[in-house]
Image (tube, protein in one colour):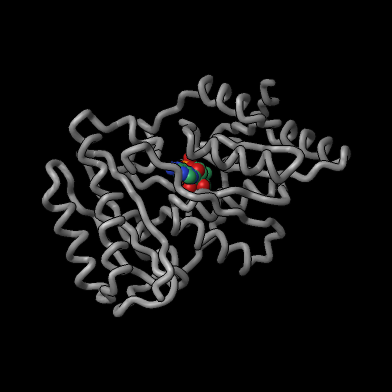
Length: 284
Ligand code: PAJ
């Protein structure tokens, strides 16, 4: 069945209100659209655990830098509605930019420290935009649970911190990374890769797995492993390394020698297309 499509805040609030009247719990999956199997896995998790599933599609301008891909970000709205319908979405919230950011809007959420490293150091202001829109969406939808992908590991960490610091009464669920058969993490940006770039893009996951295997064999030196990642990317035609990092999964600060929960994170550019991937591992 097609979801109710709400462009206006009043329609959204009415839909959620009616669901609550019927005694249903509310699950929420925030997205920027161009939906793929990764997003579908989040909607399925919400469907399984909650009675009323809200998906939002909003290409959030304030999380894009001035030279980033906001204008060319894919917006296949009808296809997205079809995927939402197939996965059993009850309500699709697709606001206009002016609806979320009317004239005079001037508030922002900052999660200092966590927002400035990794993705944040390559994309200044990005997480300020993410945290701000996610808090707004939570206030609009007021879900019981919200679903995010481990694909954006730093985003998850920042949202969890914001929830804790601002006492936001929503349970955050984190779902595993969905990958293509050859290991490439699904992303709305993969459509920008040409045939050769697509082939070489498997280097992200392959080098992460190689580093994980080295850790399992006993390697504990972050600098040695960072060199391995860097060399693998440098040796790949068309790839340019943005960063390769081994960090403490909680503080997101470099850790050497490795111990505890470690996040291995990569950002690599193929032409104008920037890809990220990561693995989370428990170092014994
Ligand atoms: P977007 O990139 O559309 O992603 C929406 C959600 O889908 C995020 O939680 C992301 O981690 C998850 N996701 C993307 N690819 C995935 C994959 N291969 N496997 C599993 N989950 C995947 O992330 C955003 O939008 C925005 O920053 C948003 C949170 C909506 C705020 O604007």
